[in-house]
Amino acid sequence: MALASFSTLPAGLTGVPVPYTFHVPNNDLRHLPNLARAANIGVPTWYNTHANAANGTFGVSRDWLLDAQETWVDRYDWRAHEAHYNRLPHYKINVTTPSDGQVFELHFAALFSKRRDAVPAVFMHGWPSAWLEFLPMLDLLAAKYTADTLPYHIIVPSIPDFGLSSRTKVDRELTLPVAAEAMNQLMRALGFKAYVAQGGDVGYALAQYMCGVFDECKAFHVNFFFMTTAQYAAVANVTVTPAEQAQLALSAAWASTGSSYSYQMGTRPATTALALESSPIAMLAWMGEKFIEWSDNRTPLPLDTILSFVSFYWHTKSFGRAMWSYRALTPTIGQGLPPIPLSLTKPFGFSSFRQEMASLPRGFAEVIFGKSLVFYKAHDFGGHFAALQSPGPFLEDIEAFLAIVKTKVLG
Image (cartoon, rainbow, N blue to C red; front, top):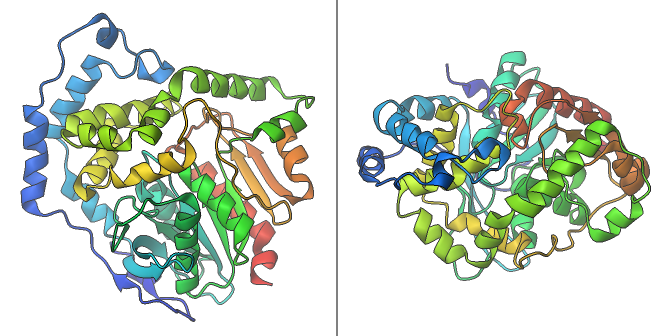
Protein backbone atom coordinates (compact mmCIF):
# COMPACT_ATOMS: atom_id res chain seq x y z
CA MET A 1 0.00 0.00 0.00
CA ALA A 2 1.39 3.38 -0.98
CA LEU A 3 1.86 5.98 1.73
CA ALA A 4 0.45 8.92 -0.22
CA SER A 5 -1.20 10.38 2.88
CA PHE A 6 2.28 11.40 4.10
CA SER A 7 2.94 13.47 0.97
CA THR A 8 1.23 16.72 1.97
CA LEU A 9 4.01 19.27 1.62
CA PRO A 10 4.66 21.60 4.57
CA ALA A 11 3.76 25.28 4.50
CA GLY A 12 6.36 27.89 3.68
CA LEU A 13 8.16 26.11 0.85
CA THR A 14 10.82 28.17 -0.86
CA GLY A 15 11.88 25.38 -3.20
CA VAL A 16 9.97 23.16 -5.63
CA PRO A 17 9.98 19.47 -4.65
CA VAL A 18 9.05 17.30 -7.64
CA PRO A 19 7.53 13.87 -6.93
CA TYR A 20 9.89 11.11 -8.01
CA THR A 21 9.55 7.40 -8.75
CA PHE A 22 12.66 5.26 -8.78
CA HIS A 23 12.67 2.90 -11.76
CA VAL A 24 15.70 1.11 -13.17
CA PRO A 25 15.35 0.63 -16.96
CA ASN A 26 14.77 -2.98 -18.03
CA ASN A 27 17.98 -3.07 -20.08
CA ASP A 28 20.03 -2.00 -17.08
CA LEU A 29 18.25 -4.51 -14.89
CA ARG A 30 19.11 -7.34 -17.28
CA HIS A 31 22.69 -6.16 -17.72
CA LEU A 32 23.70 -6.40 -14.05
CA PRO A 33 23.11 -10.17 -13.60
CA ASN A 34 24.81 -10.80 -16.95
CA LEU A 35 27.90 -8.96 -15.74
CA ALA A 36 27.75 -10.71 -12.38
CA ARG A 37 27.44 -14.10 -14.06
CA ALA A 38 30.42 -13.41 -16.31
CA ALA A 39 32.71 -12.32 -13.46
CA ASN A 40 35.68 -14.62 -12.90
CA ILE A 41 36.12 -15.04 -9.14
CA GLY A 42 39.73 -15.73 -8.17
CA VAL A 43 41.07 -19.23 -7.57
CA PRO A 44 41.28 -20.53 -3.99
CA THR A 45 44.19 -19.27 -1.88
CA TRP A 46 45.06 -19.59 1.78
CA TYR A 47 43.74 -16.09 2.40
CA ASN A 48 40.42 -16.24 0.57
CA THR A 49 39.58 -19.68 1.98
CA HIS A 50 40.40 -18.63 5.56
CA ALA A 51 38.85 -15.16 5.39
CA ASN A 52 36.27 -14.10 7.95
CA ALA A 53 34.90 -10.64 7.36
CA ALA A 54 32.91 -10.72 10.60
CA ASN A 55 36.08 -10.54 12.70
CA GLY A 56 38.30 -8.76 10.19
CA THR A 57 40.44 -11.75 9.23
CA PHE A 58 41.51 -11.17 5.61
CA GLY A 59 38.07 -9.90 4.45
CA VAL A 60 35.28 -11.75 2.62
CA SER A 61 35.77 -15.40 1.81
CA ARG A 62 35.70 -16.93 -1.64
CA ASP A 63 32.79 -19.16 -0.59
CA TRP A 64 30.75 -16.15 0.54
CA LEU A 65 31.39 -14.33 -2.74
CA LEU A 66 30.51 -17.38 -4.83
CA ASP A 67 27.25 -17.81 -2.94
CA ALA A 68 26.46 -14.10 -3.25
CA GLN A 69 27.17 -14.24 -6.99
CA GLU A 70 24.81 -17.17 -7.45
CA THR A 71 22.08 -15.51 -5.40
CA TRP A 72 22.42 -12.20 -7.25
CA VAL A 73 22.24 -13.88 -10.64
CA ASP A 74 19.50 -16.43 -10.01
CA ARG A 75 17.30 -15.38 -7.09
CA TYR A 76 17.58 -11.69 -6.29
CA ASP A 77 14.47 -9.63 -7.14
CA TRP A 78 15.27 -5.93 -7.58
CA ARG A 79 11.74 -5.07 -8.70
CA ALA A 80 10.31 -6.27 -5.38
CA HIS A 81 12.67 -3.97 -3.50
CA GLU A 82 12.00 -1.13 -5.90
CA ALA A 83 8.25 -1.45 -5.33
CA HIS A 84 8.84 -1.27 -1.57
CA TYR A 85 10.96 1.86 -1.96
CA ASN A 86 8.30 3.53 -4.08
CA ARG A 87 5.59 3.06 -1.44
CA LEU A 88 7.12 6.09 0.21
CA PRO A 89 6.79 9.67 -1.03
CA HIS A 90 9.98 10.53 -2.92
CA TYR A 91 11.05 13.87 -4.35
CA LYS A 92 13.82 15.63 -6.16
CA ILE A 93 14.56 19.29 -5.55
CA ASN A 94 17.22 21.72 -6.76
CA VAL A 95 19.08 23.80 -4.19
CA THR A 96 21.96 26.23 -4.61
CA THR A 97 24.74 26.59 -2.06
CA PRO A 98 25.23 30.32 -1.35
CA SER A 99 28.94 30.00 -0.63
CA ASP A 100 29.92 28.89 -4.15
CA GLY A 101 26.79 28.86 -6.33
CA GLN A 102 26.77 25.11 -6.95
CA VAL A 103 23.41 23.63 -7.90
CA PHE A 104 22.47 20.28 -6.37
CA GLU A 105 19.67 18.02 -7.55
CA LEU A 106 18.83 16.32 -4.28
CA HIS A 107 16.73 13.23 -3.80
CA PHE A 108 14.88 12.60 -0.57
CA ALA A 109 12.22 10.31 0.82
CA ALA A 110 9.85 11.84 3.35
CA LEU A 111 7.03 11.30 5.76
CA PHE A 112 5.37 14.70 6.07
CA SER A 113 3.04 15.37 8.99
CA LYS A 114 -0.13 17.42 8.86
CA ARG A 115 0.41 18.61 12.42
CA ARG A 116 1.35 22.25 12.87
CA ASP A 117 3.66 21.34 15.77
CA ALA A 118 5.57 18.60 13.93
CA VAL A 119 9.34 18.65 14.55
CA PRO A 120 11.39 18.58 11.32
CA ALA A 121 14.28 16.10 11.36
CA VAL A 122 16.75 15.14 8.65
CA PHE A 123 18.41 11.69 8.73
CA MET A 124 21.73 11.33 6.93
CA HIS A 125 23.50 8.11 5.98
CA GLY A 126 27.12 7.37 5.16
CA TRP A 127 29.15 4.90 3.08
CA PRO A 128 28.59 2.09 2.06
CA SER A 129 25.09 2.88 3.23
CA ALA A 130 22.37 4.84 1.46
CA TRP A 131 19.01 6.38 2.29
CA LEU A 132 17.80 2.74 2.36
CA GLU A 133 19.35 2.36 5.81
CA PHE A 134 16.42 4.30 7.26
CA LEU A 135 13.72 2.37 5.39
CA PRO A 136 12.88 0.05 8.35
CA MET A 137 12.52 3.12 10.59
CA LEU A 138 10.24 4.77 8.03
CA ASP A 139 8.12 1.62 7.87
CA LEU A 140 7.79 1.59 11.68
CA LEU A 141 6.75 5.25 11.72
CA ALA A 142 4.19 4.73 8.95
CA ALA A 143 2.70 1.81 10.88
CA LYS A 144 2.65 3.69 14.21
CA TYR A 145 1.24 7.00 13.03
CA THR A 146 -1.02 8.55 10.43
CA ALA A 147 -0.19 11.78 8.67
CA ASP A 148 -2.56 13.50 11.11
CA THR A 149 -0.80 12.13 14.21
CA LEU A 150 2.86 11.91 13.14
CA PRO A 151 4.76 14.24 15.54
CA TYR A 152 7.59 14.86 13.07
CA HIS A 153 8.47 15.71 9.51
CA ILE A 154 10.93 12.95 8.58
CA ILE A 155 13.33 13.83 5.75
CA VAL A 156 15.70 11.10 4.48
CA PRO A 157 17.91 12.33 1.63
CA SER A 158 20.48 10.69 -0.52
CA ILE A 159 23.31 12.86 0.82
CA PRO A 160 25.08 15.04 -1.79
CA ASP A 161 26.65 13.09 -4.68
CA PHE A 162 25.45 9.76 -3.26
CA GLY A 163 22.80 7.61 -4.90
CA LEU A 164 20.07 9.67 -6.51
CA SER A 165 21.55 13.05 -5.49
CA SER A 166 24.01 14.80 -7.77
CA ARG A 167 25.24 18.18 -8.93
CA THR A 168 23.96 19.70 -12.17
CA LYS A 169 27.52 20.70 -13.12
CA VAL A 170 30.57 18.88 -11.77
CA ASP A 171 33.49 21.27 -12.19
CA ARG A 172 35.13 21.05 -8.76
CA GLU A 173 35.70 18.66 -5.89
CA LEU A 174 32.92 18.48 -3.33
CA THR A 175 33.88 19.31 0.26
CA LEU A 176 32.25 18.60 3.60
CA PRO A 177 31.33 22.27 4.24
CA VAL A 178 29.56 22.56 0.88
CA ALA A 179 27.81 19.20 1.28
CA ALA A 180 26.57 20.28 4.72
CA GLU A 181 25.47 23.59 3.25
CA ALA A 182 23.46 21.71 0.61
CA MET A 183 21.71 19.69 3.33
CA ASN A 184 20.88 22.88 5.23
CA GLN A 185 19.56 24.44 2.03
CA LEU A 186 17.35 21.38 1.52
CA MET A 187 15.69 21.92 4.89
CA ARG A 188 15.32 25.64 4.23
CA ALA A 189 13.79 24.93 0.82
CA LEU A 190 11.20 22.72 2.51
CA GLY A 191 10.17 25.69 4.62
CA PHE A 192 11.84 24.63 7.87
CA LYS A 193 13.37 27.53 9.78
CA ALA A 194 14.41 25.15 12.56
CA TYR A 195 15.18 21.44 12.46
CA VAL A 196 17.09 18.55 14.04
CA ALA A 197 19.95 16.72 12.29
CA GLN A 198 20.69 13.02 12.78
CA GLY A 199 23.46 10.94 11.27
CA GLY A 200 25.94 8.12 11.39
CA ASP A 201 29.20 7.65 9.50
CA VAL A 202 29.45 10.49 6.93
CA GLY A 203 26.02 11.59 8.14
CA TYR A 204 27.51 12.15 11.59
CA ALA A 205 30.07 14.57 10.13
CA LEU A 206 27.33 16.40 8.24
CA ALA A 207 25.08 16.61 11.31
CA GLN A 208 27.92 17.90 13.51
CA TYR A 209 28.90 20.50 10.92
CA MET A 210 25.30 21.63 10.34
CA CYS A 211 24.63 22.07 14.05
CA GLY A 212 27.96 23.81 14.53
CA VAL A 213 27.51 26.32 11.70
CA PHE A 214 23.88 26.84 10.71
CA ASP A 215 21.39 28.58 13.00
CA GLU A 216 18.49 26.62 11.53
CA CYS A 217 19.92 23.38 12.95
CA LYS A 218 18.84 23.51 16.59
CA ALA A 219 20.02 20.09 17.86
CA PHE A 220 21.78 16.97 16.66
CA HIS A 221 21.77 13.27 17.48
CA VAL A 222 24.36 10.77 16.22
CA ASN A 223 25.21 7.11 16.67
CA PHE A 224 28.84 7.49 15.59
CA PHE A 225 31.52 9.82 16.93
CA PHE A 226 35.23 10.22 16.22
CA MET A 227 37.08 12.17 18.89
CA THR A 228 39.84 14.68 18.20
CA THR A 229 43.26 14.54 19.85
CA ALA A 230 42.23 17.36 22.19
CA GLN A 231 39.05 15.53 23.18
CA TYR A 232 40.99 12.35 23.92
CA ALA A 233 43.30 14.36 26.16
CA ALA A 234 40.31 15.86 27.98
CA VAL A 235 38.91 12.42 28.86
CA ALA A 236 42.21 10.68 29.61
CA ASN A 237 41.32 10.14 33.27
CA VAL A 238 37.65 9.31 32.83
CA THR A 239 36.63 5.85 34.07
CA VAL A 240 34.75 3.66 31.61
CA THR A 241 32.68 0.51 32.14
CA PRO A 242 33.89 -2.92 30.98
CA ALA A 243 31.41 -2.77 28.09
CA GLU A 244 32.70 0.65 27.07
CA GLN A 245 36.28 -0.58 27.33
CA ALA A 246 35.39 -3.38 24.91
CA GLN A 247 34.02 -0.79 22.49
CA LEU A 248 37.18 1.27 22.76
CA ALA A 249 39.23 -1.87 22.07
CA LEU A 250 37.08 -2.50 19.00
CA SER A 251 37.76 1.06 17.83
CA ALA A 252 41.50 0.62 18.33
CA ALA A 253 41.52 -2.67 16.43
CA TRP A 254 39.56 -1.10 13.56
CA ALA A 255 41.96 1.84 13.39
CA SER A 256 44.90 -0.56 13.32
CA THR A 257 43.72 -3.16 10.80
CA GLY A 258 40.33 -2.12 9.42
CA SER A 259 40.71 1.46 8.25
CA SER A 260 43.03 1.00 5.27
CA TYR A 261 40.10 1.10 2.82
CA SER A 262 39.33 4.67 3.89
CA TYR A 263 42.83 5.89 3.05
CA GLN A 264 42.73 4.07 -0.29
CA MET A 265 39.43 5.77 -1.12
CA GLY A 266 40.59 9.11 0.26
CA THR A 267 43.96 9.23 -1.50
CA ARG A 268 43.25 7.30 -4.73
CA PRO A 269 39.53 7.78 -5.41
CA ALA A 270 39.77 7.53 -9.19
CA THR A 271 41.61 4.21 -9.25
CA THR A 272 39.41 2.72 -6.54
CA ALA A 273 36.16 3.72 -8.20
CA LEU A 274 37.18 2.76 -11.74
CA ALA A 275 38.31 -0.67 -10.58
CA LEU A 276 35.17 -1.40 -8.59
CA GLU A 277 32.78 0.07 -11.14
CA SER A 278 34.18 -2.32 -13.76
CA SER A 279 32.39 -5.32 -12.20
CA PRO A 280 29.42 -5.68 -9.87
CA ILE A 281 31.16 -8.61 -8.19
CA ALA A 282 34.21 -6.45 -7.45
CA MET A 283 31.92 -3.81 -5.94
CA LEU A 284 30.07 -6.48 -3.95
CA ALA A 285 33.29 -7.84 -2.43
CA TRP A 286 34.48 -4.34 -1.44
CA MET A 287 31.17 -3.19 0.03
CA GLY A 288 29.99 -6.55 1.34
CA GLU A 289 32.99 -6.83 3.63
CA LYS A 290 31.92 -3.64 5.41
CA PHE A 291 28.30 -4.68 5.82
CA ILE A 292 29.47 -7.91 7.45
CA GLU A 293 32.37 -6.62 9.55
CA TRP A 294 30.59 -3.55 10.90
CA SER A 295 27.38 -5.35 11.90
CA ASP A 296 26.38 -7.19 15.04
CA ASN A 297 26.76 -10.67 13.58
CA ARG A 298 24.79 -12.34 16.32
CA THR A 299 21.94 -11.27 14.02
CA PRO A 300 23.73 -10.79 10.68
CA LEU A 301 22.33 -8.68 7.88
CA PRO A 302 20.64 -10.86 5.27
CA LEU A 303 22.51 -11.31 2.00
CA ASP A 304 19.42 -9.97 0.23
CA THR A 305 19.84 -6.69 2.12
CA ILE A 306 23.52 -6.39 1.23
CA LEU A 307 22.73 -7.09 -2.42
CA SER A 308 20.12 -4.32 -2.35
CA PHE A 309 22.66 -1.71 -1.25
CA VAL A 310 25.23 -2.78 -3.82
CA SER A 311 22.54 -2.89 -6.52
CA PHE A 312 21.48 0.63 -5.55
CA TYR A 313 25.05 1.95 -5.94
CA TRP A 314 25.42 0.08 -9.23
CA HIS A 315 22.14 1.24 -10.76
CA THR A 316 22.64 4.86 -9.69
CA LYS A 317 26.26 4.83 -10.95
CA SER A 318 27.18 6.72 -7.81
CA PHE A 319 30.15 4.84 -6.34
CA GLY A 320 32.69 7.20 -7.90
CA ARG A 321 30.75 10.32 -6.90
CA ALA A 322 30.64 9.16 -3.29
CA MET A 323 34.43 9.26 -3.02
CA TRP A 324 34.27 12.94 -2.05
CA SER A 325 33.42 11.96 1.51
CA TYR A 326 36.68 10.07 1.98
CA ARG A 327 38.67 12.82 0.30
CA ALA A 328 37.09 15.19 2.83
CA LEU A 329 37.56 13.01 5.90
CA THR A 330 40.69 10.86 5.27
CA PRO A 331 42.87 12.69 2.73
CA THR A 332 46.14 11.76 4.45
CA ILE A 333 47.23 8.27 5.51
CA GLY A 334 47.47 7.78 9.26
CA GLN A 335 46.02 11.15 10.20
CA GLY A 336 42.87 11.77 12.20
CA LEU A 337 39.76 13.48 10.93
CA PRO A 338 40.10 17.15 10.06
CA PRO A 339 38.48 19.56 12.55
CA ILE A 340 34.71 19.73 12.18
CA PRO A 341 32.78 22.64 13.72
CA LEU A 342 31.08 21.51 16.92
CA SER A 343 28.35 23.24 18.90
CA LEU A 344 28.67 22.94 22.66
CA THR A 345 25.56 25.03 23.30
CA LYS A 346 22.89 23.24 21.27
CA PRO A 347 21.31 19.98 22.53
CA PHE A 348 23.25 16.82 21.71
CA GLY A 349 22.14 13.20 21.86
CA PHE A 350 24.06 9.97 21.40
CA SER A 351 23.03 6.35 20.92
CA SER A 352 25.75 3.78 21.51
CA PHE A 353 25.45 0.43 19.75
CA ARG A 354 27.69 -2.44 20.78
CA GLN A 355 29.58 -3.09 17.53
CA GLU A 356 30.03 0.54 16.47
CA MET A 357 33.73 1.19 15.87
CA ALA A 358 33.40 4.93 16.56
CA SER A 359 31.49 4.96 19.81
CA LEU A 360 31.45 7.48 22.64
CA PRO A 361 31.39 6.31 26.30
CA ARG A 362 28.93 8.16 28.49
CA GLY A 363 31.64 9.66 30.69
CA PHE A 364 33.46 10.96 27.62
CA ALA A 365 30.25 12.53 26.32
CA GLU A 366 29.61 14.22 29.67
CA VAL A 367 33.07 15.78 29.69
CA ILE A 368 33.04 16.88 26.04
CA PHE A 369 29.47 18.20 25.86
CA GLY A 370 28.66 19.16 29.44
CA LYS A 371 25.11 20.45 29.83
CA SER A 372 24.53 20.16 26.07
CA LEU A 373 24.30 16.37 26.48
CA VAL A 374 20.56 15.90 26.91
CA PHE A 375 20.22 12.26 25.80
CA TYR A 376 22.45 9.20 26.02
CA LYS A 377 21.50 5.55 25.58
CA ALA A 378 23.79 2.52 25.44
CA HIS A 379 22.68 -0.71 23.80
CA ASP A 380 24.31 -4.12 24.20
CA PHE A 381 23.44 -5.03 20.61
CA GLY A 382 23.56 -3.50 17.15
CA GLY A 383 26.36 -2.10 15.07
CA HIS A 384 27.37 0.54 12.58
CA PHE A 385 24.14 0.32 10.56
CA ALA A 386 21.96 0.93 13.60
CA ALA A 387 18.82 2.16 11.84
CA LEU A 388 18.96 -0.83 9.49
CA GLN A 389 19.87 -3.59 11.93
CA SER A 390 18.11 -2.33 15.08
CA PRO A 391 15.32 -0.07 13.79
CA GLY A 392 13.01 -0.44 16.80
CA PRO A 393 15.50 0.62 19.49
CA PHE A 394 16.96 3.23 17.13
CA LEU A 395 13.54 4.80 16.65
CA GLU A 396 12.82 4.71 20.39
CA ASP A 397 16.01 6.70 20.96
CA ILE A 398 15.12 9.19 18.25
CA GLU A 399 11.63 9.76 19.60
CA ALA A 400 12.98 10.24 23.12
CA PHE A 401 15.53 12.78 21.87
CA LEU A 402 13.00 14.67 19.76
CA ALA A 403 10.65 14.90 22.74
CA ILE A 404 13.45 16.49 24.79
CA VAL A 405 14.43 19.07 22.16
CA LYS A 406 10.96 19.86 20.77
CA THR A 407 10.60 23.19 22.54
CA LYS A 408 14.12 24.18 21.50
CA VAL A 409 13.19 23.55 17.87
CA LEU A 410 9.69 24.94 17.78
CA GLY A 411 10.29 27.82 20.18
